[in-house]
Length: 56
Ligand code: SF4
Ligand code: SF4
Image (cartoon, rainbow, N blue to C red; front, side, top):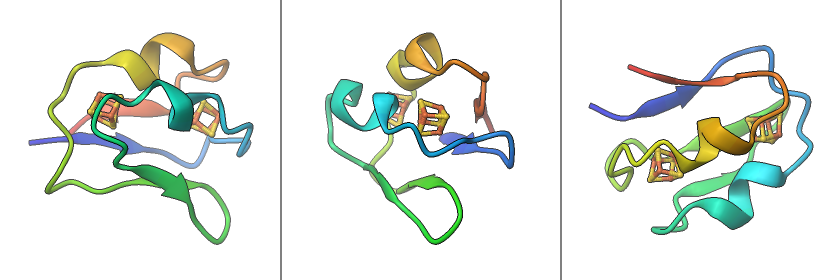
């Protein structure tokens, strides 16, 4: 289980700095979460302006 960033992402970058395990990075057309590292803390969802990170 992990959070996944959906297509609503506008690549603002806000979530990347909030992740305690640094598993968020910029992808080709949106930011992406490394599912193997995510601890499901929800911090990314809390700061996202478009609710793109969602629990899997
Ligand atoms: Fe990082 Fe937490 Fe978001 Fe997972 S839920 S990507 S650990 S901020
Ligand atoms: Fe995308 Fe939301 Fe992260 Fe911004 S905070 S990069 S819109 S997932």
